[in-house]
Each structure stands twice: as C-alpha cells, then as structure tokens.
Length: 297
Length: 282
Image 1 (cartoon, rainbow over the protein chains, first blue to last red):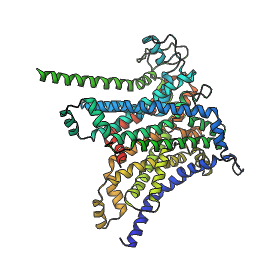
Image 2 (image 1 turned 45 degrees about the horizontal axis):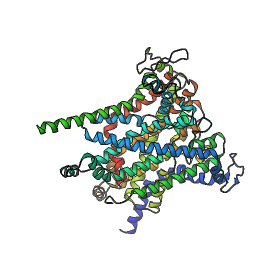
Image 3 (image 1 turned 135 degrees about the vertical axis):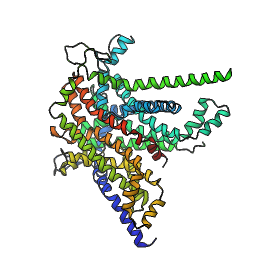
Image 4 (image 1 turned 30 degrees about the horizontal axis):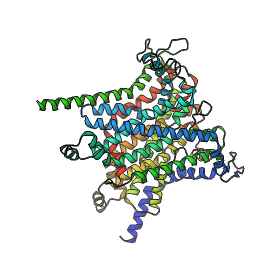
C-alpha cells in the first residue's frame, strides 16, 4: 500500500473515531481518572480552594470503617446469591425453551418482561410486595400457606431485608440470561445429540458432556457480566431499604453515594469507589482465566 | 406396543416441560400483574387491606389523577426527548467508532479498545463525582442536554464493543467493490454497512432506549429544577410523598412502563440474543 493511501486511511479512521472518542475521553475516561486522583485528597468542594493531599489516608480510613465492611459483605453476599441464582434458573428455562416449539415466542416475551421494566419501578414494586404487616408476601405466608404466625417485618432486620433485594435481582435477570443461553444453545449442531442418543447417553449425560462444554464461552461471559452487575447493585437498595436499618443494608455504591453527595466527602467516596473497582477487575480476570481452558480439558 | 409407549413417554415429557415453563412464566408475570391490579385499587388509611389479585372495588381514578398531576406530562415529555435524542446520537457515534475499529488501523487502537473493556468492568458510577463537577464547570448540570451528553458518552463503550464484533463479521469484498466504483468510506458506511446491520442497530437502539428511559442515578444527581425531572425521578419521589397511596405510585409506574413494553414487543422480531452471543465469540 503506498504512503498517501495509508495516510488517507488513517485520516478516515480518525473521522469515524473522533466524535465518539472525544465524548468517551472527556465524559467517561477523564472522570474515572479524576476519581482516582480525588481519592488521595481531602477534597475541597469549594472551587479554587486547595485540597489537602492525604495519600492513602482515605483508603486506610475505608479499611477501618465498619460500614465499609458491612457494605462489602452485603455486596459480596448479593452477588454470591444472585449470580448463581440467575445463571441456574436462566439455563433451566433456556433448556426447556429450546425443547419446545409452539408458544416459545410468547413465553420468551413473558420471561423477558421483568428485564425491560424499569429498575425504579420494580424496586418500588418489591418494596410493596414485602410490606409489613399489610403486604402480599406476608399475607400469603401467613393466611394462605400458614407458614408463619405473625407478619415478618422484612425491612426492619438486616437479616431479612436483603431477601426482597436478592429476589428482585434474580427475578429481573432470568430473562436476559435465558435469551443469551438460547442463542448459544441454538448454535449447537443437532447431530451431536443424535449421535450421543445412539450411543445410549441419557439426557443428563448429554447435558454434562455436550451442552455445557459447548456453551462454555457463553457461561463464562454471562457469569462475568452478571458478577459485574451484582457488584453494581445500587438502585434497588436505595429504593427498598435506603441502606437501613442503621446502615446495615448499605452496599458499596450506596455508601459511596452517601459519602459523596450527602456528606460531600468526595475524596472518601472516590476511595470507596476505587476499592470496589479494584475488586471487580481482579475477580473478572480471575474468572476469565479460570474458566478459559480449552474445551477438550 | 412399545412404540405406543415411546410416543406416550414423549408426550408426557412435553407436558412436563410445558408445565414447568408455564409455572415459571406465572412467577415472572404475577408481580407485574399485581402492580397492575394495585393501580386499580383505592388506597387510603381508612380502607381495609385488599390483598386479592382482582380488586374488590376497582377504580380507574388513579390514572387521570397522576396524569393531571402538576408536571407529570412534562416528565413524560422530558424522558421521551432525552431517550430518543440519546439513542440517535449513541447509535450514530458508536457505529462510526465501531467501524473504525473493525476496518482501519490507527495509532493506539488496541490500547483504546482495551480501555473500553476496562470501563465495561468498573462500576458505571465510579466517575460520578468528577462527572458532577465537570457538568457544573461546563454548565451541563440541571440541563436536559447535559444529561443527553453524559448518557451518550456513557453508553458508547458497550455499544462500540458490541458493534465492532458485528461489523467485523461483514464481508469485506463488497466494500472493495464500492471503492473501485469510485465511492469513498462514507458511501460504504452509510449506504452499505449501516443498512446491512439493521438487526444489530435495532438491538442497540432498543436496549439503549430502555437504559435511557430508566436512568435514575445521573438524573437524580444532575437535575434540580422540578420541570426538568424525568419519569424515574418523578416516580421515586411520588413514592416518597404518597407512601401509602400505592395505587397512585403504580399508575404512574405503568404509564412509564407500558409504552416501553409495547415498543419492545412490537420490535422484538428485529432483535436477537445472537448479537450478544456473537460478541462473546469474537
């Protein structure tokens, strides 16, 4: 390729790239880097006033902050419950959906409805379902199933307050996982199953020996994406428990938001945000490494 | 005899499968139906708890009441304006960027793309503090266009990532033919690549629209003026103000949710999970 053509191509590349890249650099990359900088300061919110460099002070403070510890634990627990919950249920639904023909579009739409319903709306909805004493879940548990004698005050105890939040996370995510799994399942050649059936493999063996190995990339992708989503939990917590009672249901992002915009402690908020980011990136890479073995293994 | 048994066995299996699917579907849809039913219930402290899925004494009064509330129609318009404008720009800019990644070589290409992957991993709220300060400095706070700029910029990484994989799978030979015929890369991009990518662009558009229509955190942080609020903010505030009037809250919610569901259901044949799954293998 001659030089001028090559130059021309680079010019075209930058014309295509530039508008999006500029927005991306200014409004996404710069704020992330700036967060990192801010996290080393006792950040002064008054423009023009100097901020005090505190080094890793905000990070040390975070590691000794009992609420950070609670938030971290809650964030981890939420992820540990909702990721496998979504993965397993989505896979089951996708396998069943892959088996049927009639009505599959209809059912797919039904399973997908929670995915497309606004987080704000469904958070309020789950808040409503788990009200106490006059909530439908309490009503069913008490008066229909007779499992409990008295209504459970879900949001009064830290131990029960996460149940609605986790139930919401799983319920809302199944449909998306199902669609992605279905696309992967459709790409598996049917002959493999026929050959396995001739060899006398039963349904369980076919699932373990054929389906799961072949959809492994999708499984890895979904588990990473869902894990990232799990660590990002925020809206449902803010709208269902507001972090209460006594900050016992705070998660990392809700605590970061409180620190930054209620207490205007930007430096500390930035540090907590970066701790979370570091955890997510580390876990994502571990997950990808761990699962990305060749299919033949 | 055994053939009948096998046929019967197969039917039984099918019935079982359908049974589980239907049970699951009921579980998925019941909370939403319950929201719908609640929006037709009268709610007041004096009234007894009405737990049924079918309201004992239904009323549609919550809907006109919410719709005529001060500013509610403005919230609806704000949300629509922001979501549609943002979708237009994000589809245009992400597909241009993705095309540059798919077809051209340029300095720092892989570093920029790697930064995009990293951004997809970190919490989307990680930059919110400087974003807030930046918006303040640039006069973009408390402004619908300000929100649009941040929404578009924020969804460029994911959509660029998705579309790059899709564009790379398109055949190059056709593009060379256009160049030989005297067309340039803009002709290729607008006349050929974009039309050939309708399913991918539809998917990106639908999901971006959903994301913008729902966006809560930036809108909550950036907007002060009552008349500039969007629907998610309005609904969350409505819940704060009328905590016991769930009928009102859910009528407002459904006014926000139903148009989205209608659009999604009518467009869903254009979108496929294959695009998401395709990006995985790329």
